[in-house]
Structures are given as structure tokens and as C-alpha cells.
Length: 108
Image (cartoon, rainbow, N blue to C red):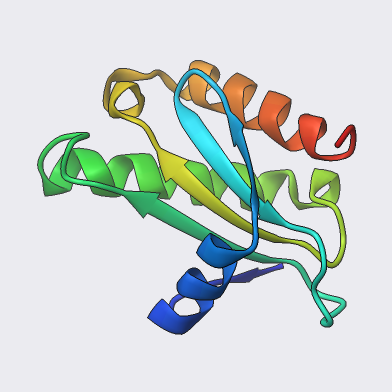
């Protein structure tokens, strides 16, 4: 699992994707990666709140992904978009929503 940092990688996933929405997050999924390793990007817009809130949401998402890397399908690219409601979500709500979204990837 590798985290995406470059704008080009984000653009590539934004172009070819399937969108899955949850209560706090939306996933953009691209399942046709030539690389064996999954790549993941986390996005939090200013709609969520100030920098402290946005960074907290991104840290929580990355922490969840590091702890649960085994549930992420191989050879996929994910962009996790934080919705406006994510800023007020608890750790338990974030983990439940992300787990449900990632489990729905396999059923597409």
C-alpha cells in the first residue's frame, strides 16, 4: 500500500473511476492498475473545516488504512474524499464507514 502525493496520480484516478458514497466519505476506485501495489490518496476540502479539522480527518483515515491494510483489494487505486460531515465524526464512526465502503468495492 502506497499513499498518493502527486497531482498527476490524483488526476489519473479522477478520470477513470467508480464512485462509492458513504455517510462521511466517498471513494473513487480504479481497479485496473498495472502495478501490484495498491495506491491510496486522501482528500479533505475546506468545506470540512479549518486546517486542524482537515488534518485530523486525514490522519484518522491514514491510521485506519495502516491498521486495516489487508482489507484493501490488490491492484486498485483509491481516492478517499472526506465529505462535510467527516469533520464532526468520531473515530468509531469513521472506521465503520470506511470499512463498509472498502467492503463494497469487491461487490462491484
